[in-house]
Length: 187
Image (cartoon, rainbow, N blue to C red; front, side, top):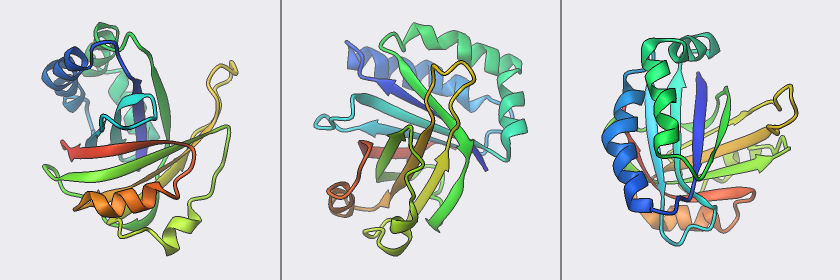
């Protein structure tokens, strides 16, 4: 699977951001051709990552993901971004490497952690032996862009805890820039 993730910086007006994202942008994203999974990872008020949301979209492969963004639905979704993401966002994409467990189902709402390691290839192997009760752990690495303006990232997504206690235990050992919150699997 191939993932494109958008990590949105905290906006000046969180309520307006959330309203626009849920009632407009996420509906546009769901129309992207070939999308197989779409998750919204909303951070909690005490989260210190600087992000309000991590939106993860999955396709069968990179070719399918790139094709979806050259479609009319992709054009509409990209044209909408300036309408709500004025505080900025970080986009990280790559081939997913499953570490542990199975994906949650559409409609589930679960506790999650996402750790971003900038300019790193931080290994996720430690999660395979001690996932603190997570139902799913995945990772991917992105490459720096050719212009040198976007760094390489390594991302670890650990989640699908039914209760916050397991996530909070895992967060104490997490590194990088870590989002802690609740995810809803939309598709």
